[in-house]
Every structure is written in structure tokens, then in C-alpha cells.
Length: 256
Image (cartoon, helix red, strand yellow):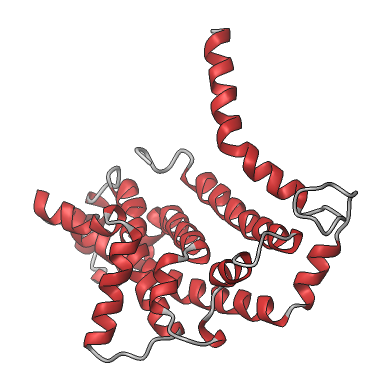
């Protein structure tokens, strides 16, 4: 048992020690990225004073909010439709293919599609691309809740004279609401962190640069404590969103 616990600690250390080092160095007073020179919040202050970082953060927020809203609505409706339909292995494979296809392949495919239809690249194209990417994740989370959903409640509601819309708003949505919200939080987290698809579908110019793209542009000149601070902020937001989604899933979403 001790050997197993030791192996568990070693694995977790291998996974999370680099992240911990990055977070610690984001509070490094020294201008050197690796040499500790004392505790300081200077680099977080510089983030707030950098217009490019602020602009990129705002772009990421706009993209994440729109992509989350659209993918949550479409993913929830898709989950409801698929769950009531006859089981099909081909449909399941097609539905979850965006989760399996490598990001670089999906990014090239989306770029080719936008070029083919002559769609102007920018924040709108990033939002559309993120919806394609997030849709399957939202659908998977909501479907996990629907596995234990009692569809006889809908039938009883319809027998009592309620319309399909009223049944959905008053019966179905409140019962699957935690799963829908968990899917939305997951979609927001994936969108705020996503780099490859955004990089391929953003087009040229700072006006469509997201925060991960800005980090990539800055890191080409070397890792600095300012980059460590920015990465720490992004990880903090992602951690909070994932934790909230897990709290909502707890006890409600079997199989997730």
C-alpha cells in the first residue's frame, strides 16, 4: 500500500510540479524567469497596464461567452434529440468526432471551410469554430444526465394539456439544469484556453488576438515572469470553472 501511495505521489508530482513552479515564479521579484529574487506582485500589476494583454483578454472573454451560449443551447437540444432517437453507432461516432479529431486537423478543416465560403476571419470565425469544438462536450455532459431522466414526466405533462415548450421549460429544463450549467462551464473553460483552432481561424491583426495567442506571441522572445503571471491567471480561471462544473456534476451526472 505504501508503494502504491508513493507511486501516486510521484505521478502527481510529475504532472503538477511544473505548474506549481510556474505559479511560484509568477511572484518572483527578479526579472530573471528562473532565479528567485523575492516575493512581489509587480508582474500582475504590469499585466493590468499592458494594453495588448487587456485587449487579448477581452477578445477571449467575448469569444468564450458567445461560444458558450451558442454551444450550450445547441448542445442541449442535440442531446435531447439524440437521446430520444433510435440508437446508432454511426451517429454516435459522428457526434463525438470533434472530441477525438486532433485540434490541428480540425483547425485546418475549419480554415479551409471559411476560405471556401469566403467568410471573413476574425472574432466571429473564432466563435463559430469554438462552437463546433464545444458542441460535443456540452452534448456529452447533458446526455449523461438524461440517462437517468424519467421521460414519463413529459408524457404526464402532455396528458395534462401542457404544450411541448411548456413541458420543456417547466419539467425538463429544471431537472437537467445542473448538467446544462456544468456543460456551459466546461465549454467556457475550453474556449478560454483554446489556442490552435483560434490561431488558424483568427485572421490577421491584434483585434482578433485571444489571450492564448498573445501568450504565444510573447513567449517567442523568451519566458518572463510577466508570462508566468499571465499563465497563472488563465490557469486560475480554468481551475475555478472546472471545479464548479465538478460540483454541479456531483451526485447528478452518473458516468461523467
